[in-house]
Image 1 (spheres, rainbow, N blue to C red):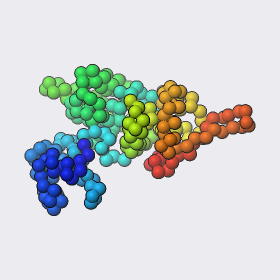
Image 2 (cartoon, rainbow, N blue to C red):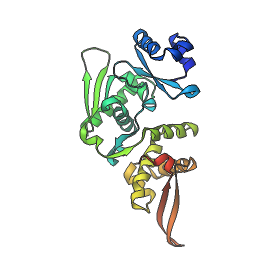
Image 3 (spheres, helix red, strand yellow):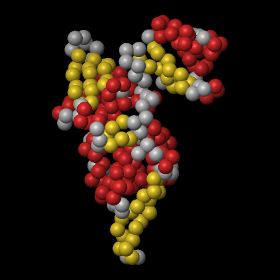
Image 4 (spheres, helix red, strand yellow):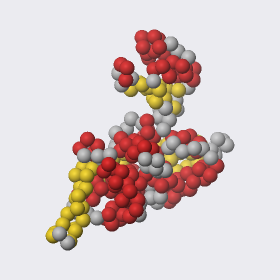
Length: 256
């Protein structure tokens, strides 16, 4: 969770002056007392802190991780939503490995913990293992529901996309009352791939992402309205459209 200086002080019962003047000593004290590491981001009035698990320095959710890139390929883009989010969560985790309970995992991807969701995430992890994307092993030494999941080497060697893309898609989805940010991310990455062979059609995006034409149209509309990219139709003449070309906004797409 992202915390302001004031929120850190209130939550961990420390003074603002000690946090500012004896920063590392105060953070060490919090870690010893509460088992939580705090990582400072930014400076001055804009500074904030990210809470990290003690055992693996993993942020509490994938949206707060500091990684700039994660690896994906087209086959992974076509995975069902639970599989897709599970894969993202593991690859964003430190050392491309997640160790913790199923409840920890659900919290990490920002999903409410429930028996139904635990069943869904178990199925997703099993399917990812069966498709040779991850190594997945349940830890049955206790009844805490712990497991270890790690990305296989071949799955990290393809295309790159930024964690900031995930954050932006989540923001757009929330601002537009969309249930899921995943179609936005899939279409964004699909457009980046299709841009290499312009002009392209929505059918080309569908082949890359596995999404329906409706999902593609709606996601493109939101991404364009947020200035992620701009598309335009390409014609041979006034009656024959070849497809569309895209101009990517360098501010959002520079890492690609």
